[in-house]
Amino acid sequence: MVGAIALDGTRLMPMIVLANKRYDKELTINGYGDQNVVVVYQENGFINSRSFSYWNEEIFIPELKRRRMKYQYDAEAILLLDGCTSHTSDIFLDECSFQNVYPFFEPAGSSDQVQILDLCIFSIQKSLKT
View 1 (spheres, helix red, strand yellow):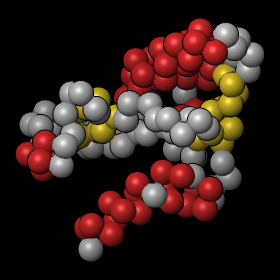
View 2 (cartoon, helix red, strand yellow; view 1 turned 30 degrees about the horizontal axis):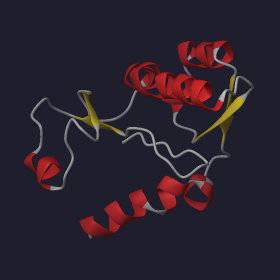
View 3 (spheres, helix red, strand yellow; view 1 turned 45 degrees about the vertical axis):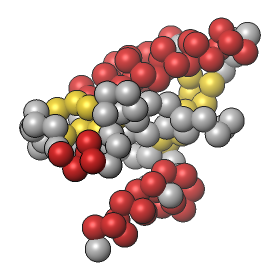
């Protein structure tokens, strides 16, 4: 899952990576659909540079542009990221430079302490599985 929360408390559309093209019934039962989540398919179900680039191009950059226009803000933006290797592709980093976004990569092993999604959403998912 790729999720993003802005400092104003709002969120960007999350993206779920599935291993097959069959939309899992459990996702629909739990309220995940086209209206509130983007679903992409990756053979092994893990995020890779291609799926992360899709999130960047289809969700993050359009939302960044919309918010910059809304707030009449054209200066730098900071994007906090964990150390997933898909976040360091040349295409993504070039786009960040072009959009005046500074990616900040959290130190390895620290995301469970500082990243809100790890502290809330993903910890809830882990507890539901046990």
